[in-house]
Image 1 (tube, rainbow, N blue to C red):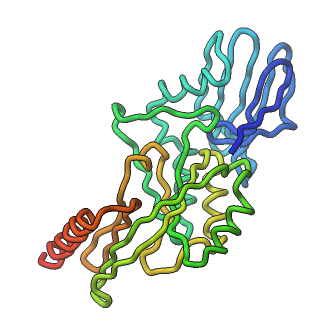
Image 2: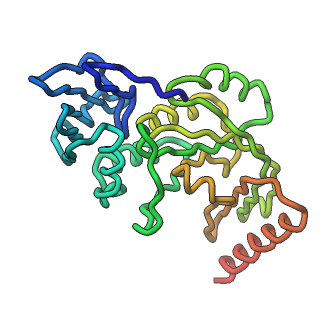
Length: 269
């Protein structure tokens, strides 16, 4: 995932920025101001317009072709304005365009979206030009050729540069099957915010996800993913918990006991 730039009139425009992908044909001079537009990936709706001159840089954010937010700073470059945007825009996780992207991913099959607005004190750094980086975790199937094919086709693309692999396990429970224990290997990779819908579509169609009643592709913000060891869903009818790390036998037993204790509590209600 190498960031590439387009130079125009002394200004450096990344090929993606925050929510959008650069429309290279849109870059132009308007008097002494360089203007560039970024479009929503796969739909080509305008999502950002940059206005940049020697005095200031302005970032406009659009939702469904209408300007929603505008941030302007003097003596600032595009990197600086994006950083400032996150500092002052406390409504990022509630912004219309962010919710539109996340909601479209939630509608895909077999994806669990674990993205929630954190407390302001828990906000983490953003990355230029991605804005936010997101991590996909995929419990992939037993055929090694599937992961190899996926890597050959996608690693090194503008949205996927590297993958890591972790051994883990999964507990699942339903009234019909009882407790099921599985060893799993998880493929994990970061994706810039601008490309998470594309990445989700590619993964869903790739056949990379191993098939199982409770197997899910997990999407998290990368910072949160780095801190998360386990994720799951518990209900009276069926439950699952995926653990993303290889652990000792003792830790495995503790997690299993906690999982079954929760199941028993649910069943007793």
